[in-house]
Length: 563
Ligand code: TEU
Ligand code: CA
Image (cartoon, rainbow, N blue to C red; front, side):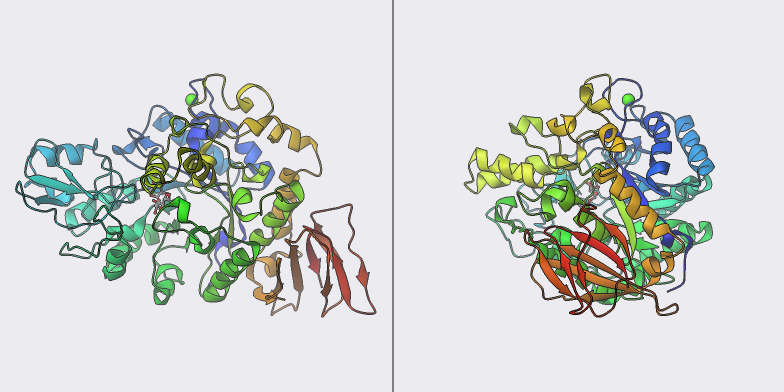
């Protein structure tokens, strides 16, 4: 693997709507982000990904774009965006936008023109099929957000368009070279403006297995999940290679793919040295236990499962590429609520999780609020939920006989809105997020979990994240923590996540130990400890018995040791 400038960096995802509201309308915005750049710099962040801020009806919170060339007025203006790029540059920070090109919005001009003339130029930007009354739909795929992927084309009784997400997100037809040219033109336009690159949304979906056909139904609705179709779809690499060659490569853009369902042998094509993308997210632990039948059928993930998922990816990636590591994002519940066992979500455990995910090989990402240990929230009723995916999942649960109370419990556990509640800046009104009415209900725990308090407290989760980031950048250990081999340690021990990062060139060896158990344990050491680089329970200096070569690891303790 060739070394790249971004390997040593720390990346951060901003969900603009919930980050910071500068003008009191209850919606986070670009000026809000600009005003917090110094904060992010202080934390140690170099690369920022903004979830979509383009013109959008916000049916899927901006992942439904009506104009790729402009900023939604709720987030600001193009001047604000240019200012953000300038201000980021001044601070040696890099900005990524979200590239959402599997679909656009049904309010995009292309789609409106397609409705006017389905057989014309713009009709061919989409998948539009004729279905005479009484005939069946072209295929029985179920959209990600529920219901069939086909919707009647407005103004036409016998025409339907394809949407693998919401009906307000018509799929773009990548088989059409004219559509691809539109996409490349737009991507280059943004890169020319000074963007460092993109996070690339839902990209596997751009290739459909054609012609359309049914798959065996997997629920009573007679529909089939589209996984099988994606598995059969061949040739997404042709589109992605073209996108790289026409846009990303000439700009030396930094890109991170949201790639699900890739085939293992495709890894080098995706993110090898000349891959389609610079990196992609590891979703091994994200998808663990998720049931196709609904949230009520999901399996919980134990610390052992979590470790096994992370290690599986680490072993698979080896030195082929540089993966992107997360514990949460805007589509997932909060990492501390998901990966830490119930009753074990105190600060020590939050720091433990932070340590073990942050120091494996790859680019560490922090999702806004994660650095404070923000947690899942709870919902008194479905009307408190904004997210379309969650509302659908809730209904699926009810339709399977789950009670309202239980179904709401699953929303509290899995909803994307858990990650979308406003950032908790302080204990003041509305957590200091807005002077107006926040667009989404705050997590009421902001009075105890907030930045203002944590900045003052040297032992806070926030200050621990700062220390972690600083450690990975420390010139004495950087080479090892960034490029060192990943070697599992005591891999079969229950409730333990431990690994070495070892530098083949210098011989430097760093041991990361994480005890997920609520009891202390004895760890056999093969090397002597030279220095404790990080300890999540500072009062608890580990006892090391040189004679027996063992170390006492306390309950929920994480240590980073120079060996
Ligand atoms: O997510 C793609 C994706 O696969 C998700 O639908 C995921 O399965 C789901 O969020 C789990 O609940 C991307 C974006 O990250 C997401 O926010 C968008 O809704 C989606 O694409 C459509 O653009
Ligand atoms: Ca605002």
